[in-house]
Length: 320
Image (tube, rainbow, N blue to C red; front, side):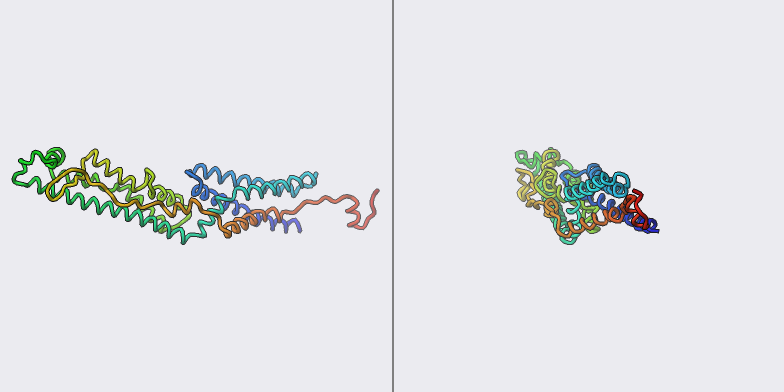
């Protein structure tokens, strides 16, 4: 009867331990993906699987050692060693998991920071669109007026005349080419919209993408949104010779430059980079491990009685 009761206790504890290990593995995966430098899914998967496999193996081995009836003293050493190693592994490799728990519990603050960063990018793209529309409209109108001048052919010395001959013989084609060349690419706008959707539908599975997008696009690095816009402007000057700066007197001496201020770094990505585990995250981590080792705690320890002990129990006399 007691053996059946013990099995009834062990079965639920086993399911709880398996569920706990799965939660630990997933948490470590997302923690590594978010917080390790240049986190890649394949290495995050490897790290999560190794962590859970080691803990699972130590748990199984400690339970097995606890149940051994032969050479109990030697198995007791194995049992204690497994528990100690389990504790060491759990403590020394806890950071990505506790950081991830801190992210989950700080959702409101982090979501607001991500939205603020997204607002910086939206403002930047809006400033660029307003700039290009204004400069293209101004250049197009002044070029058209200059071409329509009655004495247009007399301005042979004007840089504007040379520009129209070289690049703007067909004003409508020039407008079309300039409009296409200067617009923000559809892929960049789609990435911005995707990030906005991910922030609105905030889930931990989306966090790596949000961190990567905002971290890459805000700042002074070469792949930031601001720098890519500056590169686009320079490319269009070098390759398409747009947008010319032409004043009301039809003077042309240079090309327009996008001089909006740089929006700065991503506060959200910076916060995530130095995210420290909270007291609550450590507490949650400890509770999770207690649920896992519950399987070990409820496992029955096999005891071996000597002949003298048995005779005392049943009221008989020692044989020797």
